Length: 327
Ligand code: FA5
Image (cartoon, rainbow, N blue to C red; front, side):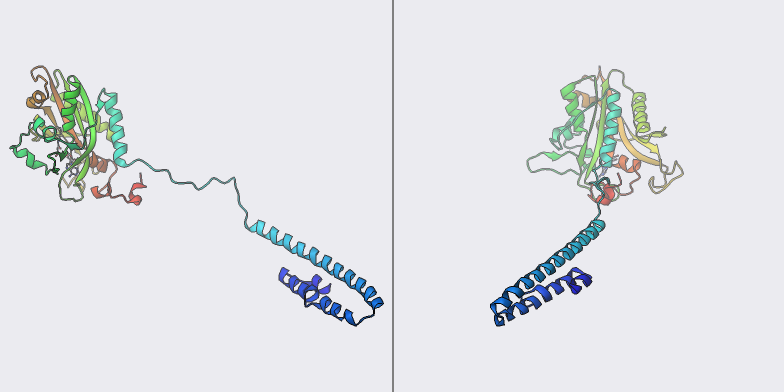
């Protein structure tokens, strides 16, 4: 009883139990001596032994329960959990910077009455070149290093074939944009990818002029950059527009004096555009005497780089989560 009382742990208690009540313990040893007793002594001492055993077992059980309760209380205090705390949760995904920009531009142009069209990435030579006033022998075909497929089709080199599809399907008057991927067999560097996004735009109506073109381009760029931007037009050559322009914006990173992004010129080349060439209208069944139009081919990937200040195009499709998680 004294050993049970002084046991300071469950282990010590168990040790005391084995010593007193175990198979080779004190009580067992005593009961082995019973054979030497007379029947009367055996009856008297047997009763006594049982009473002692019961008392010891009772004491042992109650002490054991106390240790168990203390162990449970200790565990509950250590393994405490506040189920009302908000869960850590999974980080929801976010839209890619190109997708974000594309959706903004779609919203802007749909508010101006433009339809959003889609076209195939695997195109016919006719849609990608011929119908855009670039016949097979035309040197302009060399401006875009094309991935040809073995079946005579190609990976579209720009989104301009969707102009052709739009004109043929919807006819004039027409207001459309067509965002999507384009492919060129190009040496990849900080500003060139073999796979990149463009956003084509076209308006065909009566009396469309360069003034209309500039208005829409300025509206587009102010919408994207959320401030008035300064633009300049330079002559640019594309067989499917006449006149053709390169529209530059004053660099938004440095504001004009020159920096690495604008290659120290103060201007960033962003938006080739022009008035639709009469041949292009004719090739899609539209009478150029009645109708005119403008078209543009925005470099969407490069625009996203300007907008989000991304200094290397290879980040865009590299799949690095550290990059993507910033958006
Ligand atoms: C064209 O592709 C014409 N179809 C644009 C056009 C449409 C002109 C309608 C007139 C009327 P260009 O090859 O310059 O033009 O490409 C247009 C834009 O796509 C470029 O300004 C650039 O921003 C982007 N771009 C071209 N090649 C790459 C490339 N390898 N990587 C990333 N962006 C590119």
